[in-house]
Image 1 (cartoon, rainbow, N blue to C red):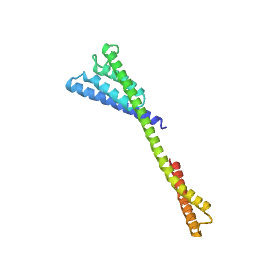
Image 2 (cartoon, helix red, strand yellow):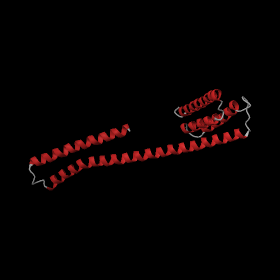
Image 3 (tube, rainbow, N blue to C red):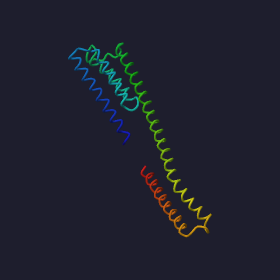
Image 4 (cartoon, helix red, strand yellow):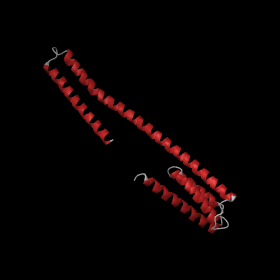
Length: 190
């Protein structure tokens, strides 16, 4: 179902831009008799469609629709297709080139943004791992040091020192356990 949403939204966007081009061209042409601006508006529409939509399909279809619209509505003899005139062929070629170049540039930009986002994610992941490893090493070092002190000096240390070291070991182990549980819950959420 999620694959149909971009197709539907791209199709609606394409249709809206083409209709806006057609209406705007008709208004400008009836008000100012500026037939020369009509192909430029459709080239702009093809550019916007190619830039905004996924892939090359919608830009290609917009190019064809633009050529037909300009030829049928705005080229003499009006309301008739005269597809093999030099103007029509030139318009078709220009709109197709605009469509494919814009689509290619847009695809390349999206790919670069994806790579940049992945690199940023890796950088953040590395920073998080460094911070976590530091936070885990600190209590482990304390636990290791307390255990070594107790083992190496067992007979020389008074009972109060043994109890203090064991209390510190328990406290650091508890803190370490909470840290690991928090990390596990974060990875489950992720």
